[in-house]
Image 1 (cartoon, rainbow, N blue to C red):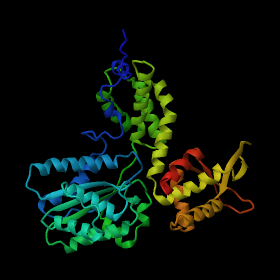
Image 2: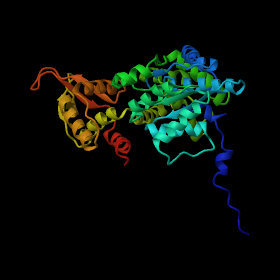
Image 3: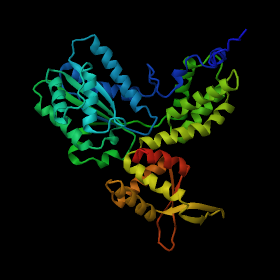
Image 4: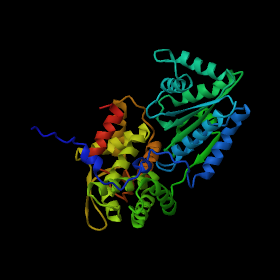
Length: 406
């Protein structure tokens, strides 16, 4: 008699797990409560509430580093708004657009119309026609809110902002308001004066979380995501401390416990310990860093790619540190700038001034992607020495995909 072979997935179904609901301990989960973001929620909701009275809302611009709660806060406010307008006669609607996926004016307008007209397909129509459809929808007396996440990724941003803000002059009824979200602290300085005055009516900075705040966030997630008693307090404390020390990034803290929990399941452990959190640290850091690289504005990606390329090619100078150690793949700021210009021109991108180049280097330094130090007096005078803070080959793969679609 032929023996029936057990399905290969059966053993995984029967395997023990430390998780109750794994989804709750992922960075993409949207909790019903957002501790330590009550102030930002109140400011945003009060600024948008005017649409409920038939008036245009203020435009908002929110910025702060990755993992500080910008996106989750905006989604929380919009979800609350949806609950309210579902039960009221208010002529209000909104669209959330991730500009990393929809990075041109045309794509963004199409995405918004897809939310406003779910049964219609506007693909293939001209940009002017799509824009007119958006105005027609608002001109029926609707007050629209368009949230633009990773707004710095929009290629024709100045044109988009000008069109959507100027649209209010053409509307006899209804209005269009914008909420821009960016990880780039220097982003607003790159806007032209017209766009800046339109988009930055109200600004909010999201500060990094500290260790105690992260501990509270993790405890709330753990209580619902894991089986009772399966996560040690030392594991929670360590995950919070690592994330606070690195960047104040809630995503990092959450991912540390997620990966540690997965490791516990893999090893048939009944508890997530600080030992497993330490084991998860290197893989989570790499995952977070590569995610940050993907969300960087294109100009910062070009600067980082220049350093990655030169490093991977084995160029650069050797430097003896104050401790007598030899440090390889160190570059003069001017050499990086020249390579950045070469790459930018080859890709048909705008070349920024040396001043803006220095700003981008400083921002990449705050992320730990570049390490910078003053050279001291030497053959080139006092300049900045730059070294890559992450594996050059891995960065090249990610950046070439981002910049060239390879």
